[in-house]
Amino acid sequence: MKLSESSIFLNDVRLYAYHGVLEQERRVGGEYSVSLRVHYNIYKAMESDNVSDTLNYALLLELVKREMACPSSLLEHVVGRIGKAVFKEFPLAESVDLTLTKLNPPMGADSAGAGVSVHLINDKTL
Image 1 (cartoon, rainbow, N blue to C red):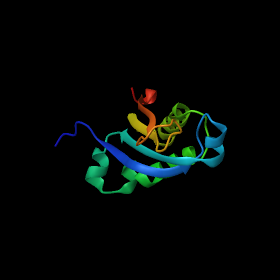
Image 2 (image 1 turned 90 degrees about the vertical axis):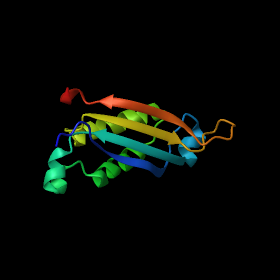
Image 3 (image 1 turned 30 degrees about the vertical axis):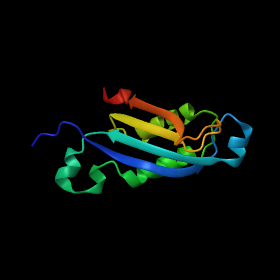
Image 4 (image 1 turned 180 degrees about the vertical axis):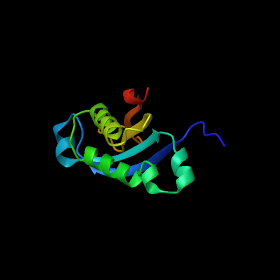
């Protein structure tokens, strides 16, 4: 059996955080959704059934919570920090697809959210 592509993911993790350009956003906070997919070769874990051979998504969740707890003006800055932390904590990660959504943005419109989506590549795995 040959593996062509693989990843682990967290989908629609809901967190309360204090990001935003406006002073009130950073003081009062708001609800956010984070989804990310970390691409790496899972073949070893498929064969071994051992958690030490995989990127542990519970640890990935703790990393996301830690970075979301640090207030920023821009969501772009937050996704950049999360991406850097993923590559630092999980050096075997080849790339990350990450979406950060502010669920109730203060823009005067009825909306399911606004946010940032990125595809980041780990330079060390090229």
